[in-house]
Image (tube, rainbow, N blue to C red):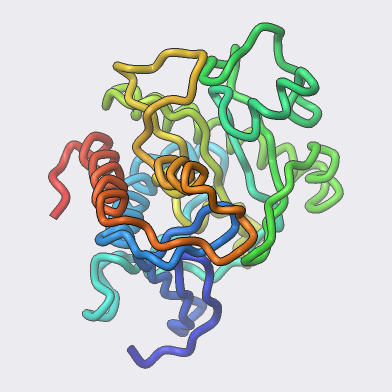
Length: 285
């Protein structure tokens, strides 16, 4: 593929496709705890890309209601050697904020809640446990870290400082609206969308644009609705399975991460494919 490389992330490569377009190519790499693991997950890049394409279509009406749009131009007009795992997208000025929406308490949110009764500046009611559904979805943004660094939760005031008050409010309201629509569609598919993160950019005309990937097992927590039971870590259709294996392996999160065993690779692939098939109602091929 004879295109200039613009950037290489934990999972994706970004190429200059000319005419204010970029080519986003999703690999089979998987990251956890701010490290890229040495073992790829077969078909992961295709799942992430094809699921994102599906979600962009589903969420377009929500975006339009806010006068916003998404960055996808085409998932078919791409080089043949990356077909199925690449998207041609609009070049944007990306905003320096991870827009996180939570509808359930889990992960780092549970840790902070157990210590403070809130997640940053968002106060939560008493008595919640791991896996509890929140009274209303909440906006808990974070920094956008470089590879090898850690995203840090931030207060809403930090978002205001970064992008200005009007845009910060717009990001919060749009993030929550997208989460609610995503959760609604996931629920219809028998999946709990516990939390997710979105990334936004700004088009040349100043309009807000949804970018990156959307509502994938890399950026979201997906739980089987049939087995949801607050009080413990939930089974999932996302990379939490890999995080749990790494924790049980004794890895210190500092030294180079270990290779994943074949059974963990297969089980992770199965979870990604299951998420895709349940959400879209189509067979992954």
